[in-house]
Length: 384
Ligand SMILES: Cc1ncc(COP(=O)(O)O)c(C=O)c1O
Image (cartoon, rainbow, N blue to C red; front, side, top):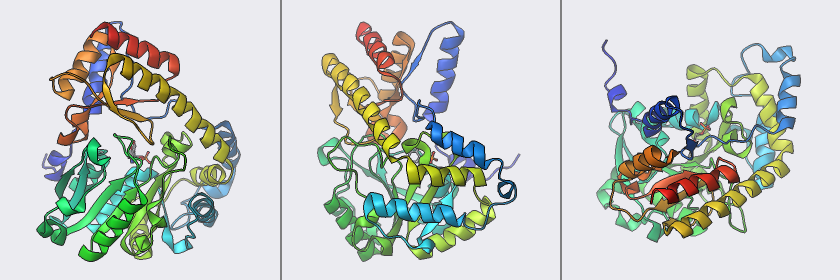
């Protein structure tokens, strides 16, 4: 069959390959500890589930959801942003999406014509490359390092590239590195975006998971940010709702208007029960997200202690449920992760799965309980 060429260009997810290897090991009777996942291990908070049980009996939820999403949800998002980040959103600055993966790919669809140039920091979550590829865009990669706290130094990007670039994807707290953005960095971003007419999409997926005194800042809190871009948000991580597919995009109203038109044509909205549960989560579950954050913090301590004992360097994460570590070995990160999987039956993701500049690093997730994390590192120690 004749498929569109972009289907061949889509980045192959290393996770898929790794899952096959895990299945094979499990078939042979081995128990594999999975530290490669980005899926929260804890269940959705019980009160949210209760709310959904009630709302599934509401027959107004059985038809197509209202265009652009329920008013109650937009209101809840407005109050959530005001309380959490001091940002006063207008209703037409909010779009409802089926999780942020759809938000990100839809943004690429409405913003890019074929061959348009997109700035993509690296290492980065593979969703951006997929979104750009599906929109037939072109990528200019910006390699980042631990020394620069995984923040872009715009003066290192050639002027000709900045002149041509149409879009920039950012993500802080950052998957896979755990880096967070500073106010100055975001201010520089707005200045560059204004000067070169670049649209900024900031992915705020891990906004609620942080190990710093103050919470991570929203890109929209920076003066002028609304003129240049939007922020994507998801319920997947903060409320353990990855399977519910609930998210939203907020910011520049021209972008939001076009995004709503695209979403209406491509997806026809988010199931009403999911929207109701999202309203409830945003309005009432703040203390639960705090507790969840504490849980990850305890797990983080276990992992950092184990890495220190192993003598592996790491980038101390300031947010997310990932630890980015540099193993003291000359092997490629893929060879190293496969060695650990085959010998210790522990799955971790190779840094190269996040782009070439992730080479030499591994990503370890904190979505397993402390006991399993300890057991995983004991196994890794045994094969050193
Ligand atoms: C940085 C980042 N953005 C977006 C997503 C996708 O989230 P969602 O479940 O909302 O599609 C993920 C999922 O792992 C992620 O790590």
